[in-house]
Image (tube, rainbow, N blue to C red; front, side, top):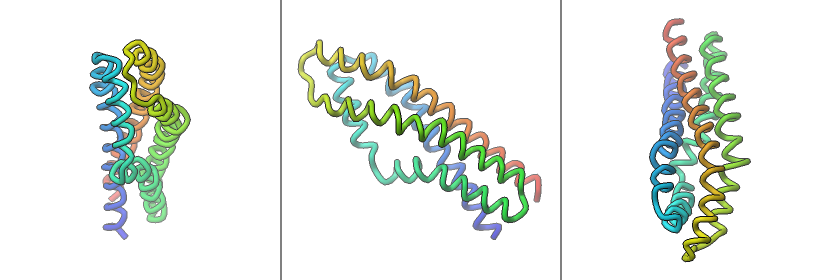
Length: 166
């Protein structure tokens, strides 16, 4: 049971880190870079990013992170490591509330609206579409970044506490 628990706990940490890093990259480079570009280029690039990100590797990390963290919590709780388990449960809650929920209720609908705008050749229309998208999307992405980083830290703390129990 130790090997399974160690694998699941380590995988939870990795998946949390994957998504924390992804959202961090959007916050510090992707959106600032697109904001510095012509609006028609920014819209077209973000439309393609939003299409291409919907792939099995992204979904494995995005959906897997909270599921695997919760499983790590269950395995640790079942083996008597309550402190580490509670930290994994906290990581799961922070991730779901701070990343998964905002993604579903804010970022994805904004992404869908941007995609629905289609190809834009008129610079004035592109500027309006981008101005409607980026200032709303970016702050919610910052929240997702912070939540995922907190989930990552809580997962790391869980592993640390578990190691101290051994």
